[in-house]
Image (cartoon, rainbow, N blue to C red; front, top):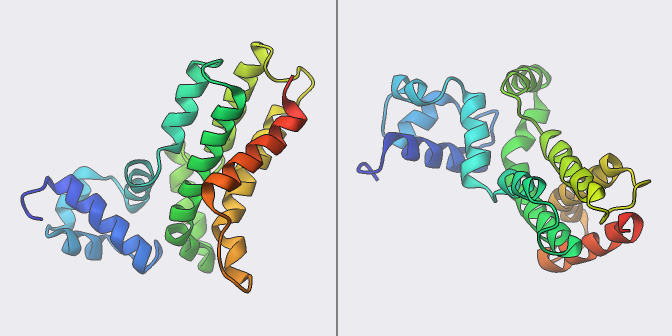
Length: 198
């Protein structure tokens, strides 16, 4: 473990602690200790715990944002159904893995407010994937693959919202089993396409 770069060890330790004790209780001191370095070393790589959290989401979870920005840059690549299915699959996996990390924030109002302020200043937050999906859908709309009267922001919100709901809604069922991700993504994409495809 010690021969890995400090930044990698910090990201791994932060990811593990955020999953096990939650973001609210994973202190920078505990993260540094688990990574085998000082808290000062942590701050050489990350300006704040919020920045470390964003980097954990970016580098340790399914690559949702790169997928969205790549598709927006090259609309028309693959079929719309294939693209929306892959977006739904990655989003469902992303939320499934990020929800346990971020859930503890909601237990402490002041911590949540401070965290939201810091994340907002970094240009990040849970609204960003919705905006990026909206950008991609508008690019497909310009190519004529999405109806001109389709509300792309509402469509993006519906897809991302459904994927986020999958992360925790099924824990309360008798079986406590989420719908299989591939089947869920395909069904969600087909349903969304029925409302927006040209």
